[in-house]
Every structure is written in structure tokens, then in C-alpha cells.
Image 1 (spheres, one colour):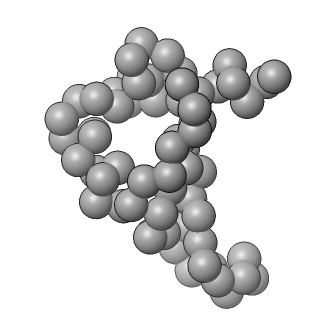
Image 2: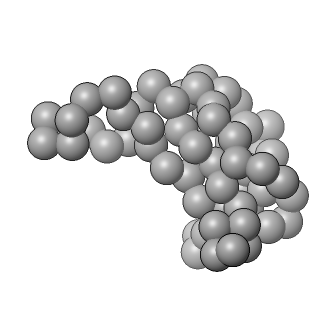
Length: 66
């Protein structure tokens, strides 16, 4: 699976629909571990809340290692 760029509301919907599951140790999508990266449109030194981005990138862990 390729990386996906999702809006905050799309990401929340995936959690609500249990497409993405928080196992307590990792986030899982389709039974595979994923990483969720917040994409901010401001410089990092101005960030107040790292969880409040407009968009997020979802990457399967094994793809990132390649």
C-alpha cells in the first residue's frame, strides 16, 4: 500500500470505523503496522499542539524501511 495523505476528519473517521486500530503498542491498518505523521503548514518553532494538524500522512512501516 502506498502512503496516504488524509484530512483530520478522514483520519478520525478511519479510527471510528475501526479501519485503523490502536492496539496499545502500535496503530494497525489491514493488520499491518502503520505510522501517522502530522503535516503542519507552519514552521515547527511555532507549533503549539502537534496533534492538531489539518492533514496527516499514513505510511505502512515496512514500506518506510525500504
